[in-house]
Image 1 (spheres, rainbow, N blue to C red):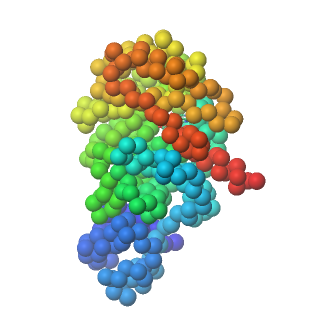
Image 2: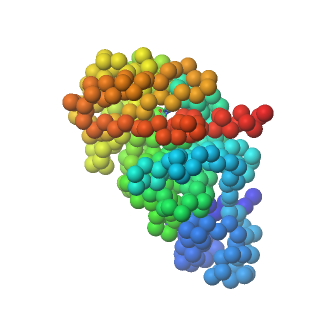
Length: 346
Ligand code: SAH
């Protein structure tokens, strides 16, 4: 089988070409054709000789994502994209506008194995990991349909990036490279449910990619109830790993906190959160739960959200509130893929 050239970072491509005595400038040329110009056909790479193009085409494929549907509009601030992979599986990615930021939220797996109780993707179960090319390819495909430059990428779509670590990291490298999509490392965030060994590994990587941790509850009992993975990686192991990350990188971490009515948004939850995060250089991102047709939780009211934030503020000042951008088009976090899969099954 041919190797999909889109799965290789530039340094991997240089190494791969080295096996055939192809100079590194060839790798750079081709990387640019693919990631900057979005070319999918060897024949269009006009600065490469015909015989070399033929040789390359025999050995490598250039993977592609088929855009099946787009919901929402740039004016509304969110556009959900449904892509079909080579094997027919479907994934979703979202383009979001917020001030001057243009963010793409990418999926890292088809489905997810973690079964978080409030997450729509969980209902699909796990299908397969995405490749690096498929992950970075979502941003490329979306950027080609847009006139505005994409400034930020968050790995917060379907799946768990730290259970598909190598592909996710390589995708981040491709997106970051100045011959690739040239998105600053500090503008690329990997979001994890809290897979402790990979948090440690991520802290050792040379790039300045950012880390977000989906905390969602500040006590072990509640966290286990809504996120089964918390049993395997309890708070008493997770928090020290996150602290270690902030120390090694000298950077803040973001804790995401999905607010579920009567579950994790009471006064005592705010107090627990303050105790748990005291002294950790962090930002807290409160995300009001996005309900979906079969969900078992309720969204907090606006009053609940503002009140919770006020409880936190004196001790944890860096609290941001995520607007439910995209909720209307079922593009909110954790709402990806299932709706379109249902359509497919009909
Ligand atoms: N597995 C990774 C990335 C995907 S989830 C992670 O857990 O971080 C991205 C974010 O969406 C997480 O913070 C998750 O808690 C949140 N989320 C999932 N379902 C949601 C829902 N229905 N409403 C609001 N946020 C949700």
